[in-house]
Length: 503
Image (cartoon, rainbow, N blue to C red; front, side):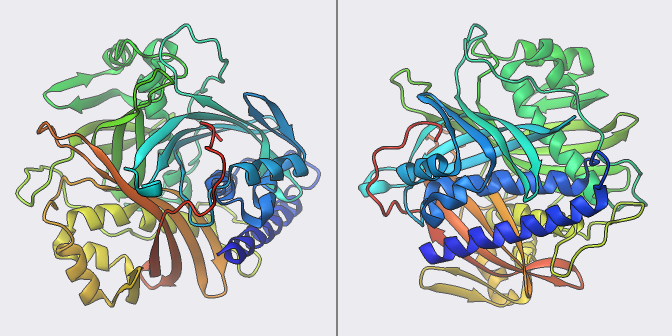
């Protein structure tokens, strides 16, 4: 397994170097434009971080390789910079080659004059070590500065900031700026381009920060909606920019610039006749913040979204939060999820890709397959057919000694997966999707957490378990599909000192 992670680190470096060479050829002699591929590569950089720090792969070299030559990780005891010191940090806090500990969500990316900055939420999960119950270890967010180097995008600076309620906090954190329009040219008909998907992803990622912090008098939250947009939560409905801003600003007394509570992932986006729709998993976690109380999962469910293209870019036209509820008879007025559709190329001249490289639309299509997997598994949609159709005709799912191969068996597995299934059931959360080109298509890996949501019946929500997926993807006539997916349960195989919150 250690050898496998070393190979992953080498492959990641080679792919980034090839991309950087291509970018340098395209932008020689001028300031590089910020493209869809830049967003994707920064996403991939951030998604690699958990694997590097959790496993200590390549003797810490994978972790150090994510930073620029003068890159800095800011920790409580001082700055860590330089390859040797960064590698030592990864070795110090590694938890073993099968460990899954850092779950990153809600990644906001903002271009700057000399690179880019970013934020993402972090939840740290410990899965049943030494026979103990699985639990939330901690959480908060990262503040990032990214730099375009000769080897591709790297961290110039990264700082973890633990969740903390209240407006009078002393730890500084960067503010989130206005939405940047990524999709420049309207897509044709009911198709979406890679830039459309990326812009909607960025829109969705801003939502939790606006809700949790109440930033800019609630306008950070309101600005992700159209001017006549609406939010529906249970029996309450909030319409229009002013009311949405007031709702976010007065949402909760614990708010403040460092408050982390609403996490979202599994972002599934589909084109529609008048824009796009989305389904996104959401989980509300109470991060203990060092107050002696245990962190806990409060509740969860999913968002039903409608997106509209405005002169300023994509915005949320309507968003409804739907609490998780088991049972096939659960009432739902939302349309059933569908399998991912092909992603269109962005208009205009596209850069020529070197042999073996993936285009932006390839990354986005694979992202959508990965995001759709939990919905298909949890709901058993279309009699299990949605799940089966995420795989190739001869695709296989493997977990331990179990192997399910072929669409008929995959369909039966998904439809009979669990008695609690139904259109509103939420259980499997996936993050940290890393995608690499391969000789036969692409490979990937993604973290997985299984959360049993109490569903409001007096039953507490519980973190059940987790681990990561190892994937193989191939491009078919219908788009990218999973050729093979293996689930590997998280396991701490080394006896390191207890990790510090935010490592």
